[in-house]
Each structure stands twice: as C-alpha cells, then as structure tokens.
Length: 360
Image (cartoon, rainbow, N blue to C red; front, top):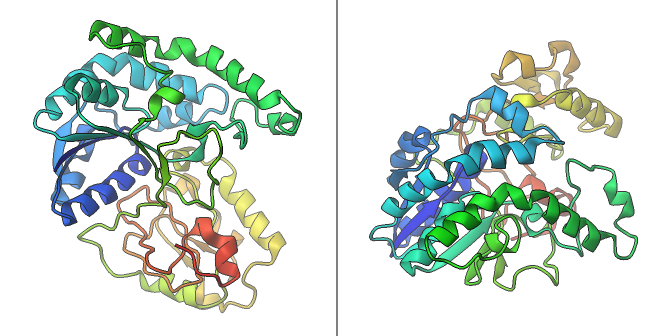
C-alpha cells in the first residue's frame, strides 16, 4: 500500500512519523513523508519516500521557538503566522504528493492533508501526539494561557464552559481552512482545532496510555498506540559515559524538554537540579560517573552545580537499549534517539518502572 504521511514542525514532530514510516516499510508498504524540505536528507537516509511541502520552516530558528513557546500567545503565533498563511501552498504540495497514494496520514497541524484526502476519496487516518489535542471535558488539560484554571475544573459545569470559550476565541484562526474547503466544494466540516482534526475512520494517539486514559468524549475512532520510537538505521552504540551513569545506581529521574522548548529553556535546568537534590536522587554514585554531554553553552548549568548524582545529557547521539526498570528520557534536538521496546520502559512509565512492573 502506498501511504502518504504528512507532518509539520521540529524533530518531535518528525521522529514519530519516521518510526511509523519505517514500520510500514518493514511490512511491505511504500510510505512517503511529506514535510519541510529541511528534513529531506534525514528521511531519505531512512530509505523512505520524501516530498517537500511548504512552508519550508527552519526548525533551528530560535526566535520562532521563543514566540511559539510563549504561554500566552504561542498557540496563536504558530497557527496564524507559521501554519495558516501557507495553507494554500501546503494544499498544492500535498495534492501533488498524494498522486498515486492509497491512504493519507496527517499530523494535527497539516490541515491540507485531510482536505486532499477528502477531495481524492482516499482513506484518511489522523494522528495526535499528546492528550491536549483531545481536549476532553472529563480530563481537561492545563492550558498555557491559564495555568491556574485547573483549580476550577472540579466545579460542575466549568470544563464545558471553558471549552466553549476556547472554541470561540480560536474560531477565527482557522477561517482560511473553512474557506479552502468551500472553494474545493467540500462541506465546512468540524472545527480543525477540535473535532475536525480527528478522522472518523481512525485516529492514532501516538502517546503512552500512562499520559491519559480514554475518556467518554474521545472520538470513537481513537486508538492509543504508545510512543513510536525512531531508531536511526545509522545509530552508533550507547555512549560509554552514559552507560556507566545509568548502571551506577538506582534508576534516575529524567527531566527533559521537547525539541522546541529546549531552545528557550529559561530556568528549567536550574529548577530540575534543585528538585533532584530535594528528592535525594541517587545518593552514593561514585564521582567518576558524573558526566556531561555537549550542549549549547547558554543552556548548560555551571560545572559546580553537578554532583555525583547528576548527569547533564544534551543529546545521547546513539541508540539506547536500557534494561527493564531503568526509565530513560531524552532531549533529541540533534539526531540521536532512544529505543525502548519489548518489556523495557520509557520515562512516561517511571512510576510503574519503579514498582518493577511490566509495561507494554
């Protein structure tokens, strides 16, 4: 089967689809990933098909990261300045990429993908990367513009009111999507930031069930898959220093940022170090097992702030195979990845791993 996979964003928006593409290829299918030109080499190195889709955003634009990660205005900036202005160009490129495809798989922000699939009469599979995209009234998320609103969630009727408020505030952001659908002779469809982003055929929730349990108002087509981990075919062995640190004591707690937030970390690392010390993590690890990896200098804590109990890992740069019970997180701003499979566990399963239970 020829599968078109569309995605948009930084490495955190690319890796899951590389893993999906590799899995499909290993099963005899022909996947093509349609995304920014910037990722062509990475995708083709995995022997997957590639098709460029505008905008050719540069994932290392730190100014864009800072604006996108703004708690108050980040979502509006991403939608209204990075995605929607390029909708027509994205639709044109996606339509070209879909020629010959037999099914279309979309990312939450590739609005053109669903339109192209509907026009062509192709099966459409949507994906989401985090529970936030489901916006459940039964498990309402903490939203960045209103971080303290969670205190009101227990009051009957508050979550539905907030959902109506957010829908009203964001409806104008996606007006061009409805306009393009009308131009192409399609019905308006649901709101592309809410119910309209989910395919009635199949919605793949590409996260661990530890992050969210299914709720009554989730789309009936939702299937929680767990995290799809991408392991580069050219991966090297586990870094010796990191291996020594991981085996030198009990399982560590990992504080990590995504591939956008890492560029605007602020005081994250300092607060993480302070939290680790308050929790008394990994006491008694020999000092020669303290380690550091290359990181952008502004993000790196002072050398004196690290102790024998702490490792600062900018990027592992290799495949990690970790023994069961050792939760591992990662910051994969570069091209290294973490592999956790079988009865192994990832950082999202930390509490379960500490109990020594088998997961997924």
